[in-house]
Amino acid sequence: MKILIAGASGMIGQQITKLCHQRGDVVHFLTTDKSKLCNDPNYKGFYWNPAKNEIDPNCFSQVDAIINLAGENIAAPWTLFRKKKILNSRKRSIGLLNRSIPKKHKIKAFATASAISIYPHSFTNYYEEDVTEYSDDFLGRVVQSWEKKAFHLKEDHKFPVAIIRTGLVLSETGGALGKMKGLTSKYLGAVIGSGEQWVSWIHIQDIAAIYLFCIDKQLDGVFNGVAPNPVCNSKLTRELACLLGKPLILPAVPVKVLKLFIGERASLLCGSHRVSAKKIEEEGYHFRYTNLKPALLDVVLHEKSQLIEELA
Image (cartoon, rainbow, N blue to C red; front, side, top):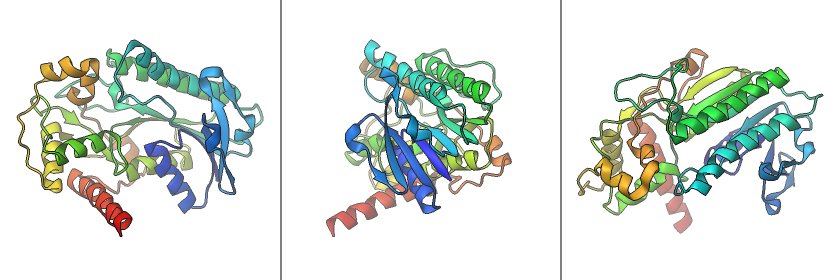
C-alpha cells in the first residue's frame, strides 16, 4: 500500500511511518521544510505550504490512502496570534488536501486527526461518538471547525473518511507526558486541582495502529482514539511518580493558580473527559495496552533503555 501522510514528522506521524515500513508500505510525506525532502524507495517527501495554498501534486501519485495529522502545536502560549495559527493550520491543511486531490485517483480511504476536547468538560459523563452537544471553549470550537472540513472530503470525493478523536498520548518521545515526566523527575510533580478530572489516554503504539486499522478497513465516521480504561488525574500523576521512583512532595495545584499562570491553556490539565473506546473495539481493533500501569511502564522503560544505548 502507498500512504500519503501529512504531519509525518510529529510524534504520532513518526510512529505511523515506522509501522508502515515494518509492514512494507510506501510512505509519501508532506513537509513545509524543503531541506527535509528525500526520495528513498519507501519514503518520499513532497513540499507543501497550506498557509500559501501550495502543494506538489505529485504527492498523490498512485496513493491508496491518506492520513492527515497536520496542525500547529497547542502547547505554546495561546496568544491571539497563536490561537489563529492553531485554528488556521488545521482548516487550511485539510482544505488544501481536499482541493488538491485529482479527479482521477485511486484513494480508497482517508483518516484524519481530531481531539476529545470536542466533548464538554464533565466529571460524570461517559462520552461516545454520537453526542450532539460540544464544548464551547477554544479547543472545542477548533475541533468542530476541523471536523467540519473533514466531512467535506467525503462529500466531495466519495471515499470513506475516518475522524479520530485522540486523547492524551503516552509516548517516550515527548508530548504532554514528556513534560509531566520532566517535572516529576525534578520533584515538581503534583496533582492538578481536585485530581478527580478524567484523563482518557492512549499508548503511542495503539493510536498509530488505529490510523492504519481505519484505512485498512476503509472505516467511515468518527472514532475515539483512546484506551478502554480512562483514569483520573490523581491516579495518572501518582502512577507516573511511582514508576519514576520520585515522591510527590508538592501539594495539589489549585485550578485558580494554574489559570493565573497559563490562562486558557489550563483547560488542557483541568478538563475532564471520560471517553469510550467501544466503537473502535466493535470494529475489531484489539488494544495492545488497555490499562494505564503497563502502558506507562513500557514508555518509562523504553526511554531508559534508549538512554542506556546512547551512553554505551
